[in-house]
Amino acid sequence: MSNFVELLKMTREQPDAQRLLFLFAATDATKKSRKQNEKRGTIEPTMCVDKLPETLTDFKTLSKEADGVSKEWDLVFIAGLAGTADKAPTEEEAEPYLNKMTSDIKTGQDLSRYVVFDRSENPIVINAS
Image (cartoon, rainbow, N blue to C red; front, side, top):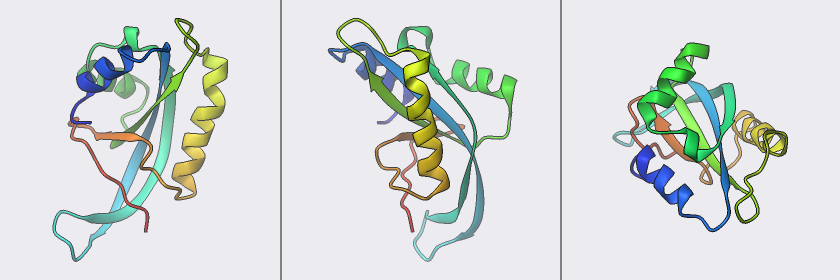
């Protein structure tokens, strides 16, 4: 996924209505690894929210809204949650999945299932080590 607008477009094209899950996290880069362009450190969840794709327009607006709650984030993890036909999952149905995202990050689980962007909307690949 190269940018947020592409993600929104893909989400809107799904056969079942979607709800997007966002987990914002702070990083603590401790040192660079031996490989070029690779950093090591920790990730700490700071806040999460779910939104319907049709309420979103661009990454800048999402970032501004997030900063209005807390500026303590460096990455945003994104997942889609499918509903049924034209009925998107409710906020209550999304909550356990947001909790799972938080748990995955805190316990160092495989994060490859999430789309991740930094504050500048650069796609990020995270490898557990």
